[in-house]
Length: 493
Length: 128
Image 1 (tube, rainbow over the protein chains, first blue to last red):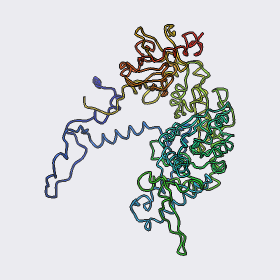
Image 2: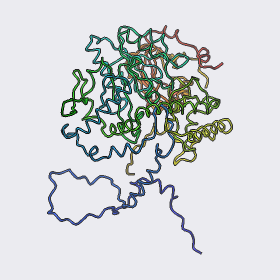
Image 3: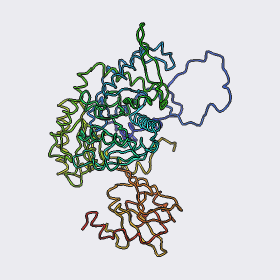
Image 4: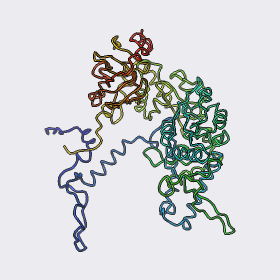
């Protein structure tokens, strides 16, 4: 009888070894062709280092290593991702098809505008779409992320006040439900941030707003609908108060999928809005790709838009598209023309869906969030119990000793990404759930069932929740240790 | 963990202990560290900085949130607890002892009267 040989390590340990730890001296993954050109000495010295630790592995090992770690990813292509405020909606494959068209993908940024009229027409078309969506007069596509769009808007507000004798206007009002990027952008723009509390219904506290609407007011940064997933019903009054005090109204467009085709922020009184193409308009998101945060402005801020803006010169020979610089532009915010590939994807999405499609997005986004709210009513606390917009904020406070963190971690075992937790800050143990318009009733039913089972576990077996997740490649991580002793890169022993 | 009766407390959850040499030792309360969760980073003022009562003097970062640190009493910073900068978990394990944050040479002792005693602070945080 053959004795089974004991492996020196478990197969799990083997699977988890880093590429560096799989290195065997002398092993190689490539065979170089024979030298068929005259040998040349390298110019200068110090260009080659021989002290770098590089893994010595075969091609097959490299392929297995990267294929295996790629399968540890959690993504919108594999699972439901109800991450509130992030709008993790499906990214249609047709977006990739158009972005890969050689005429768009292989365009060189230094190509002359005459040779790239099609691409410029596309960018101009996207500007027009976004102006229509927001009701604004102008649009700049160059900001490279949502927070970059915020900074652009803030710099335009500053430029506007400076140009209109308002250099003393330093105060920026920001509600206590705002995304953290809002006060950060305002501070980067040189403004002093003053927080405005929410009232008992989750709207902005109008009394507090009136008190702060003084003659040093620069403006307000506001998200409509708010991060509580609520349509702030004081919004028109808020814009009136800000404008009467000489301020401007900034709109954070992070939650636009709730109101697409139904409410134009310009009609409510907003002066400047940024849009997150990677949220509202289905371009890749998170680790999947760069963001894009175009800014749209009304007539007052039109001269300050970042350059370049795409303009059209009409003539009898047809339209000619050119890069232009607004008269009092805040300048360039980066190289070239923004995330062009992302802009192509958003243009594709809007063109294919059309006006009715925009209405369907907002209708389904709001319907889905309200469906989940009702499915989970009674299981989790609803601090602001109103009809919600595209997301719903629960509080995981019903069972003592069980935190939002435990609920979120346990959801991973059911194959769902965790919702946004502990945000907005005004809700204790917040669980902020955004199903987005792209999820089916069946997916939402399965998600609600998982949360109801977790609620049952919280009552009957809280320790099981404290130790969750149980079925993921790694279980509960020691976040404190990870922050106190970060282990960020491989080092030789 | 009971709040020691030998010191005063602020509504922002800091404590002040008057030392025999007239300086004040400052830290955050057990309630504060429990609410924050595991503390991973502490940012403190420098020795020689002058601080005013209730002004922001630093930050305490936990796995959950970053919280501003307010000075419960004004004066000049005379000592900073390097041990807590190196081992922030001291704030969690010994908030009233080894987890102290700074020492201040008090400029106006009457500011102490605006702070709470242990009993009043306990009431504020829902004990007793």
